[in-house]
Amino acid sequence: NRSSGSTSACLLDVVWQVVRSMASEAPAKNMASTEVAEVAEFVKPPLAAMLNTFDFESVARETMEPQAWGYYSSGGDDEITLRDNHLAFQRITMRPKVLVNVRDIDMTTSFLGVPSSLPLYFTATALAKLAHQDGELAIVKAAKKVGVPYMLPTLSSYTLDEMLQVRQPGQEVFSQLYVNPERSRTEEYINKLEAAGVRALFITVDAPQLGRREKDMRNKFTQQGSDVQGDDEEEGEVDRSQGATRAISSYIDPGLCWDDIPWFQSITKMKILLKGVQCGEDAVLAFKAGLHGCVLSNHGGRQLDTCRPGIEVLPEVIEALKEVGATKDNFSVFVDGGIRRGADIFKAVALGAAGVGVGRPVLYSLASYGERGIVRMVHMLQDELLMVMRLSGTPNVSSISAEHCITRNLADHIVPQPQDN
Image 1 (cartoon, rainbow, N blue to C red):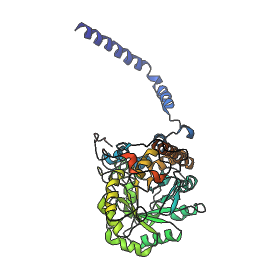
Image 2: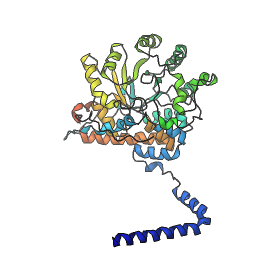
Image 3: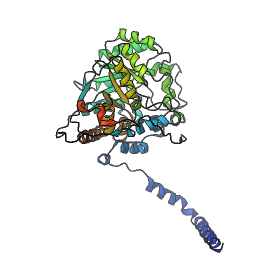
Image 4: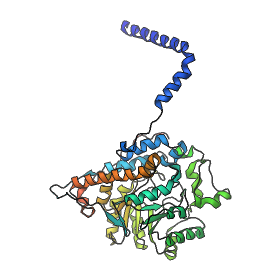
């Protein structure tokens, strides 16, 4: 009609004017582009502006090298499990109790004989130097400052000796273990840990093969690798062509099985736990094998996509362990993956976890502001947890129970359309 025709004519006039303007201003194009780039340049906010863990992630995305960001942020395949790790906590709703004296809140606890300022530990994450030059050394120091244990990683940027040397007097640490096909290398590593007074050994059992993390795979890994892979590098067994994940995979033994557990128990007196349990049956097998606990984990959503978050597995595991006589005193259950709020810590404890492990929040706060960033991140979680405990009517950790949460929707999944990586 006439109206639409007039509109079309006007639009054509505007387009033509824009085209002529662009042609006449071509010499100034480079200058204009530079000005736009200057306007768009990221300016890192002050540390005091960080209000939650997501703020650190936003800063880390802008400040980290693409290679490092691709490794840390990537998940397996379509990253459905990666996203669901945090979404699962949102499917648990709160059931607060009122008229409880919550003037004083005590969130301190202990697990595996180690005291902690809150039910949280820093879980093992590989190659922390990708986040910050101080890498694992900064994490060790920050863990002491905030009063939580740190699980030393096998595939670290700094050597085990260097990580152990920066411990402060009285500081307790755990260690994560990737098992090598050459058992002598693993035994030597375990002996070093025990001699240094490491309190517990967490054997990773969910990674006989590392997952396809496509954001990472698009990058050739050119950074410093892990110290424990030194011999593999020299023999040409480290594939750097498809990201950091492929580069570190040569160290791990896909043949690790239940038959190996007695061997570990024979060579160390450290408490042994399995990291990466994802069903009740395996938790029961670990208990019957005489182990000290397990971590319900899907490796940060980086392994088998569409498997369940650790927090969703937790009720199943607690129920299965009850049936065989396990208690919190003789078998500790932890959860990692997706913890971003103080409320997430509360929910995990309410459902039976001794504590939770955080990984990416540590790396993102480290990448953004170094050791100071990690300390602030934990202080924020403490502030959030204190508020949640007070509003829920729980003056201390032992008073947090399943009665404070509703889980009827925990197993409900609405899978969003996968995003291209």
